[in-house]
Each structure stands twice: as C-alpha cells, then as structure tokens.
Image (cartoon, rainbow, N blue to C red; front, side):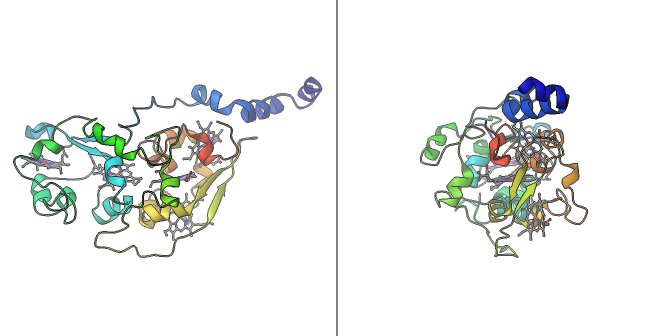
Length: 258
Ligand code: HEC
Ligand code: HEC
Ligand code: HEC
Ligand code: HEC
Ligand code: HEC
C-alpha cells in the first residue's frame, strides 16, 4: 500500500512522510542548530565594545536575572539598548549620569547596587556564568525543554513571573493586540508556524518589531525561512539567544512532535 502510493506520488510523498514523522530528527542535519549553553548561561552576555580597550573586564549581563522584574520593552525601548550585543554606545560616564545601566530604578545605588569603586567588579568581571548561584531562585517557575529550561510564556500567563511593563514611559497601546497569526509554510507537509501577538506585546513594544524586523506593509512573511531564523533574522532575533530557542520546534509549529 505504502509502496504503491510511493510509486504513484514518488518523491513528494516521501518528503511528506519524512517531514511529518521525523522533522526534529532531520532538523539537525538540515540546519545546524547551535550547541545549547547551560540553562543558567542562556541569555547571558559579555558586553565588550570598549571594556577591553579601557583596561576593565567585559561587563556581564544576564537576561534571566533581569527579565523576571523588567519587561524587554523597558530596556529595549525605554532605555534604548540594542537587540544585538555590543551595538549600544554604553559609556561609564553615561551610566553614572543616570542612563543605561544607571537609570533611575536600576543600578542607581538605591533600587540595585550602583556604580561605586567597590561594585565595579559586580559587572566588570568577564565571567559569563556570574550570578549562577541565583538560578535556584527560578525553581518555582514552570519548566521547558530548551533555553533557560523555564517556560517564560506560561510563567507570564499564570502570573508567576510578571515583569514591570514600564519605568517612566508607558506603553502607547495598553490594549494587547490579540491576533494569533498563522504563518503557512511553502514546504509541503510542514505544519505552519503560529505567531501569537499577546505574549510579545505584553513584553515588547510594537516598535521593537515593526517596522525593522517585520514590515507589515511589505509583508515579510514570504521571506521567513528557518535558515534566516537561525541566522538571527526575523523570529531568530530573539528566539536564538534570549527567548526559547529554535530547537523548540513545537512551540512555534504546534503540530510537530518534538
Ligand atoms: C551595573 C553594571 C556596571 C557597573 C556597576 C559598572 N559598570 Fe562600567 N560599564 C558597564 C557597561 C555595560 C559598560 C559598557 C561596556 C562595553 O561596551 O564594553 C561599561 C563601560 C565601562 C568602561 C569603558 C567605557 C568608558 O566609558 O570608558 C569603563 C572604563 C568602566 N565601565 C569602568 C567602570 C568602573 C571604574 C566602575 C566602578 C566605579 C564601573 N565601570 C561600574 C557596566 C557597569
Ligand atoms: C534590564 C535590561 C534588559 C532586559 C529586561 C532585557 N534586555 Fe535584552 N539586552 C539588554 C542589554 C544591555 C543587551 C546588550 C546590548 C548591547 O550590548 O548593545 C541586550 C541584548 C539583547 C539581545 C541580543 C543578544 C545577542 O546575543 O546579541 C536580544 C535578542 C535581547 N536582548 C532580547 C531581549 C528580550 C526578548 C527581552 C525580554 C524577554 C530582553 N532582551 C530583556 C538588556 C535587557
Ligand atoms: C520561533 C519560532 C520557530 C521555531 C522555534 C521553529 N520554527 Fe520552523 N519556522 C518558523 C517560521 C516563522 C517559518 C516560516 C513560516 C512557515 O514556514 O511556517 C518556519 C518554517 C519552517 C519550515 C519550512 C521551510 C523553511 O525553511 O521555511 C520547516 C521545515 C521548519 N520551519 C521546521 C522547523 C523545525 C524542524 C524546528 C525545530 C528544530 C523549527 N522549525 C522551529 C518558526 C519557527
Ligand atoms: C515580537 C514581534 C512583534 C511585536 C512586538 C508586534 N508585532 Fe505585529 N506582527 C509581527 C509579525 C511576525 C507579523 C506578521 C508579519 C508578516 O506577515 O509579514 C505581525 C503583523 C502585524 C500586523 C498585520 C496583521 C495581519 O493580519 O497581517 C499588524 C496590524 C500588527 N502586527 C500590529 C502590531 C501592533 C499594534 C503591535 C504592538 C501592540 C505589534 N504588532 C507588536 C510581530 C510583532
Ligand atoms: C523581539 C523579540 C521576539 C521576536 C522577534 C519574536 N519573538 Fe516570539 N517570543 C518572544 C518572547 C520574549 C516570548 C516569551 C517566551 C520566552 O521568552 O521564551 C515569546 C513567545 C513566543 C511564543 C509563545 C510560546 C508559548 O509557549 O508561550 C510563540 C509561539 C512565539 N514566540 C513565536 C514567534 C514567532 C513564530 C516569531 C517570528 C514570526 C517570533 N516569536 C518572534 C520574543 C520574540
């Protein structure tokens, strides 16, 4: 029966069968998925645009330590940190005058440790796993198979980890954009990817995605591909380094079986 169908429909059927049954297995061969860091280092960065040249060690920044309390939009919209490491012109003078890390409500010496001679090394230690011992604080959050091994989406929905949405600049649109977009695949047999606006608009500003990453007017959809995603474009701007990574196929393609 299978072979009869196979002879009739040939390669196309084989592709459908392969794609449906074993995509996650094949994925590793199709696309080189990056080797995952330990869960307590996922989303950790060493910021070293100027540190090395200025005789201080690179500054460590951990997303999981910060995202519990602050939404992405606070840092990536209000405080204007770029979404690519070493792209922001952070200087110590700016920090100490209340911008970037030193913004009021942040490392201002009140809300969190400030910029004093005895605290320099808390940031400038060049250690990607600094703060590791605090990872146990996340133990109560729902788990996931990839990234930090924390299901941040569920944690948000269940009210277990609800970061502040703003420091001083309120989101323009308090009303969440609830559409779930279905992104159909051009590949036969690939279950479509879904894009729910809700978790994204809660955490991010519309301007974090539109128009730079996704141009609504020109409809970027037709250019989405896993190769582009894995190279850090489109969904991959976040879903490689900070939000659950590309290896977690099922969260974007719910009909897949990984
Ligand atoms: C809350 C974290 C934090 C603390 C505390 C901190 N820094 Fe920084 N600092 C940074 C970040 C982030 C950068 C940007 C690093 C880069 O791009 O290489 C930076 C940049 C620098 C630079 C290089 C750029 C420039 O402005 O010359 C120097 C030097 C520096 N810090 C010195 C210090 C000293 C000295 C202290 C303690 C008095 C200190 N920092 C405390 C986060 C911190
Ligand atoms: C407390 C501030 C803060 C919060 C909250 C925060 N970020 Fe970041 N993020 C940063 C900083 C600082 C950088 C480094 C910027 C630089 O070096 O120019 C960064 C870098 C990034 C990068 C680039 C990573 C890389 O490897 O190049 C991505 C993607 C990103 N953030 C996404 C997010 C997302 C998504 C969220 C919410 C879940 C988030 N961030 C929450 C401060 C923050
Ligand atoms: C962060 C979301 C996300 C994750 C995670 C994800 N995908 Fe995709 N994937 C997409 C989007 C968006 C597209 C483009 C629209 C579509 O084809 O549905 C896509 C397209 C595809 C396609 C069609 C071919 C192509 O390159 O356009 C295949 C096959 C695919 N994904 C397989 C996988 C596999 C296997 C995994 C896990 C290793 C995975 N995806 C993880 C979002 C994701
Ligand atoms: C995490 C990224 C992200 C954020 C944040 C985001 N969007 Fe989108 N938006 C998308 C993607 C992806 C699409 C689909 C783009 C495409 O098909 O080319 C989209 C599509 C749209 C569309 C077109 C809908 C359609 O049916 O084609 C509108 C309108 C839109 N977004 C409005 C908003 C508004 C308003 C906000 C803020 C409240 C927002 N978006 C925040 C990623 C985002
Ligand atoms: C600007 C950053 C950013 C971009 C771009 C982005 N996402 Fe997300 N996404 C997030 C964050 C943050 C979450 C919350 C969950 C987490 O951090 O793991 C999330 C959650 C999701 C969820 C909810 C999953 C769940 O189980 O709760 C889906 C599905 C998803 N993203 C798909 C996509 C797809 C598909 C694209 C591209 C079309 C995309 N995302 C682009 C940041 C982003």
